[in-house]
Length: 149
Picture 1: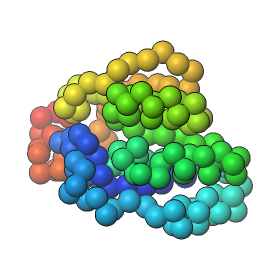
Picture 2 (picture 1 turned 90 degrees about the vertical axis):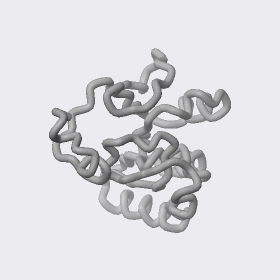
Picture 3 (picture 1 turned 120 degrees about the vertical axis):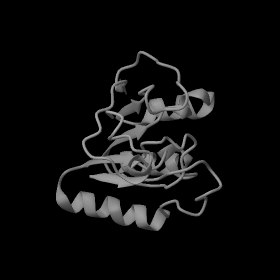
Picture 4 (picture 1 turned 180 degrees about the vertical axis):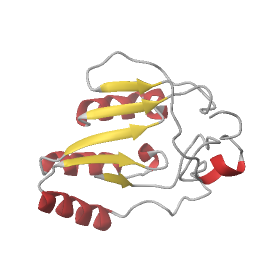
């Protein structure tokens, strides 16, 4: 199940289908822990114990570490879909790399305003060539479809 835990993002990429913007703009738009618990209960009820944690940038939710830990405690595999900026924070990097089952960093230079560190680690993959199926959010207003993206 794909779950968006925040609408905050530190990159504000032009293609963002969630229209997530840098911190401060949507600072109150984080999923609450109560809602997240309900999501985990629903996932357990479905019998498919996988959660794909997304956003915005999921690591901008102040409870992201608690959320990953809570999924692990319930034997739900947490997959983190991220822009990878957490890799620049040594403490956050160490904890997330040690607790998420799988992490996908989208790092396509056509869209992302800055590159993040590329690490070799099991369970960590990078998407360097993003394929936009249909533009949403700012991608529509930025005419990315007309530019071949």
